[in-house]
Each structure stands twice: as C-alpha cells, then as structure tokens.
Image (tube, rainbow, N blue to C red):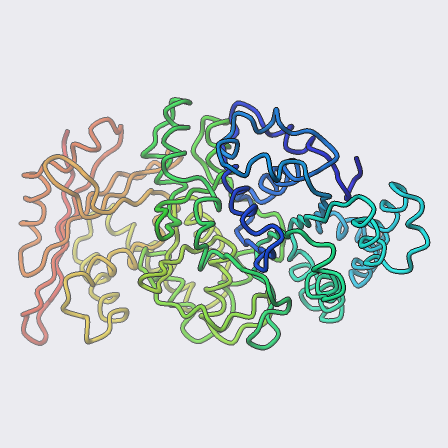
Length: 532
C-alpha cells in the first residue's frame, strides 16, 4: 500500500464505527459512471460536511491493494447488484490537495510549486512500486505504463480539489499551473481514455470558470446550488438525524433549530454532519462552525462594498428571504461583479441556504446566525453600525416597556425597508419586526409561528442560557388595537410554551393601521408582563 497510489482501506476503517451514518449508496452512483463518458464527477459542499469521509469510503471500496469486504458487507451498498463487480478492482490515486499546500508553506515555498510537488510525489511512489517505470519520461507516461502492467485502470479521488483556488486566490499563475495539471489528466485524449476509470473530485467551490465556461470541461458538477441526485449525500438527512437523536436521547426539535436549514429538491432537509455529531458527543447544542481558514471568513464577504449588500445582509439576519442570481459567479474568492456573486459564494461556503424553486437565499439555522451576529458587530460600515445601535436600543425600549419608542422605531423601519408596492401587504410587517429586532442573536433564539397553547405564536424570543433578559412573545395585528393583540396572546395561551422558563415574560402587541389618515400614528404597541 502506498501513500497516494493504492493507500488501502485504513482511512475508512478508522471512521467505520458504531456512530458511522451509512452513506455508501454514494458508491452506487459513482459505479454508474465507471468507464463511461460521464466518468468525471465533481461534488462541492461546505467545509465540515463530510467531504473527507466520502473520499476515504470510496478509496476503501475501489482500492485493489486490499480486501474491503468486511468494511462494506453490512452496508447499504452491499445490497446493490454491482457491488462485487467494482469492489477492490481498480488502482486508486488519492490526493488531499491541502496536504501539499501545507508542505509548501512549511518549506516557505511558493504555491506555484505545488503542481510539481504532486507530480514528483506520484512519480516517486509509482517507481517505488515498480522500479521499471523509472525510464518513463513523464508522469502520464508512467501511469499509462502502470495501468498496462497491472491491467487495472485508475480511479482518481481528489479531496479539497479547490484548495489551490482558495489558497492562491491572488496568484493566477499558480492557479493556472494547477488547472493545467488536472487538464492533463482529465481532458487529454492520449491519457484519459487509456488510464482513467472514474474521477471523484470534491471541494468547497465548483470548478473555476474561464469566462463563462468551466476551466476543466467534461466534468459533471453537483453543487450547493444544484446538487441533483447527490443531494442526500451532501450532509445528514432529516431521517438520519431523527434516528441519531432517538438513539442518543437528544431533543430532535432543538437539533433541527440549530443545524437544519439546507433544503434540496426531492431530499428535504439536510444537516451539517460535523455539527450534529459534535452536539451529540458533547451533549451540548452550540455553534461548532469554527473558522478553519481566513480565506473563508464570513466577515470578508459581508464587508464587501457592493451596492445593496449592507441592506441585504440586514434582511438576512432579520430572517428575510432574499432574491439572488447565481449564474454569473466565477467560482473563486476574488472575482465579484456585484452582491449576487458574494451571496452565491456564501451559498457554496454554507453560510446561506439556497431555495432553487424561489431563487432565494436565507441564513439556514441558529449556528450560522450566530456567525453572522458575531461578524456583523465588527463591520465598519456606518449604515451597519446605525442599524446595530437602533436594534440594540429597540430591545432596551422593549424590556423597559417604552411602548411609544417601540412603536416609533417599528414605524421607522417599516417606512425605510418596505417598498411602497408592498407596504400594506400583511406579510411585510413580520419582515419589518425581524429587521427591527435583528440583533436578537446576542441574547435570544428566535422562533416564528411557534406551536403554543391553542395556536401559533407569531414570534417568540427565547433567552439564551447566558442571558438574563426576559422572554418576549410578540403578536402582530393589522387594523386592530394593540390591546387586542395582547388579548389574543392570553386567549390562545401562547405563554404556555414558556411555562418551564425561570424568567420574566413580556407580551408585546404591535399593530399597524393601514387606513390611518395622513399625519396620524400608524403603528401602536402594548407591552405587559405575563404572570405565570
């Protein structure tokens, strides 16, 4: 067994324990491409979404240098008709590109040398396996000869394929050198048909574009925008998470609030696998979306100075779905033509969830909302700082039961943030409330349409464990009194959902009179403390 050529099944054996969530049906989809025209597959997904797990699994399955029957005999793939046909039948080249980049940095070398490092490593290993290959002049010639001698073509598995695009984001020469290496393997009539059985390439970004076309053509791409048939293998499905919660005695509803939010056609909800497993292992729901690279820092993107981006970020934090055009994105970290490209990048990074039917994005869950809230506090835009100050003051006024001030601020946000065309639409007021209270993450969890008592509470703010602020139950009404909103909260027994909460509870009724005459108050507010 080698390091890069036929590395064996040890990587998968290490993770194949009692907590392993069976994703082996992914192998069946790749089997359908082996030796066929569509044998080049690139699947992009955010960090911490199980990319390396899938790469290790595929390596263990295809690698001809080992026997992996025991690893897969109890898995879903073993039930498929072609299971034995492809099991341990190919040479495998497994590359984790981040490893080469780390070594180049350790040596204090330019990243432009990474492609040569990869070539040198593969050449040396091939010659070590078979010394007669030493006479071959190029890596491709060496690999073709290797295939001929072993009578087994190569399955390429490339993890973090886009690390060079991300790490050398400002070095076009380094990027092109790396892309040319990949083209030499996967778009080469003298090599690809002779040596390549299949390719599984995975990373955060889709394949970089040259103009409007992919820099490495012929790949079938499956992304966070269009995962298609690979959607259920991007992360954990809701069924899988429910099973884990039941097995580990975890509250599924809280798990969903924290880590759900990515929804794919024909699949439904998808969860971040790393965060789910960390929550289970630690018996603690928290944000495990920690930074791993400055290149992927959220602050870098929400600070971009594109027209309308500041307002859009505020809408997203407030819980509003925002329209986005994903078609122009160049699939890198630097080529932005406007706010849509920034939003599209954040979809691929996992910071935003994309609704392909509506063409909209939103912040997916509590974990990512925390990241936005942390980042927005250090953004230097004056407009952002003003929004933060106004929202913080609104919470202060609400807790101090300053009804006039609360009504005035809600009216101000309603006027500023709602287009005239939609001002009198009922659905706009909830968006206004969320925009006005958009710094809630510092102290609260936000729930909309929460099942409570004898109905559904419009918006409920649950205090975080480390906050001493009161709970808020907010009811919205149109053309009715604020007292009527409070009465509905009481009549429908919405506060019952907070019965076990050892905190004060404030009931907040906010109304809007769209028929008010010019100069008259349109918004009113009533705040009362609820006694359990």
